[in-house]
Length: 297
Image (cartoon, rainbow, N blue to C red):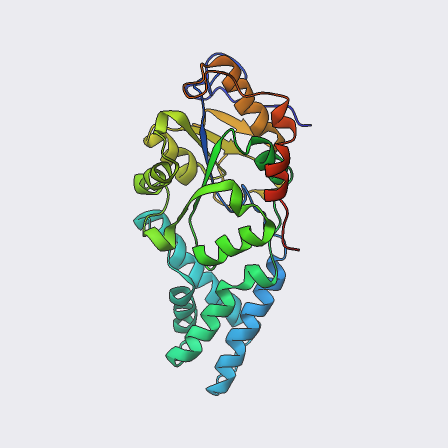
């Protein structure tokens, strides 16, 4: 198992693991490149291009793949501007519209809706992968730590990501879901984190957030008073990931998350139960955790 690694970059002054010194009863989790990777991305892209190309041909517009690639880049530039500058995440219908505008053509609303549906549901047809150790960590902590998901969405809206998690058998581990397309607030907007904390019924001082992007996950969590855990895995690294961090702790594998929370529990008094998390019970998660973790496939 990879060794726990804590980087002394801001508040972590007392050595490995010391930054997460408070009792953590809840963990909020980022979706992309933290909980799920990007497996089958090429297949999703192929189907999305095919759906858009088919609708363009209906109106007599033939498009080369190079132009589609350029239009897709334009849509992502549009997305990143609104995401990072305005803390709003355009959804599949809006992004498909941007692509069509980039191509200089018009499509009927019904056609745009059909293409947007293909874009949105691509992760169900060709699902991404759960990152290594994630299922096991959720199972082992289930019943001891409460989980909520906080996701900035793009082509894949919250309703689809929620269904994907249900198919994978992990939605039942989560007591709350915050998707930017449903709330209108993207990280690091405090409302995204406060919404998750409210669903969990805990205060920021009792919670930590784990994510892979400094400017959205880490800064957002720290702004509202949560502990911040940077998930850094070079195989699943977002293009906006930074080399330096203000996170309290850095992990490289999900197996380290349970270890980290056990260590924090052993150092801090447990406000609710009066006892530290049981290292033995955390190894397996019990029968309830095992049933919950069974996917539909």
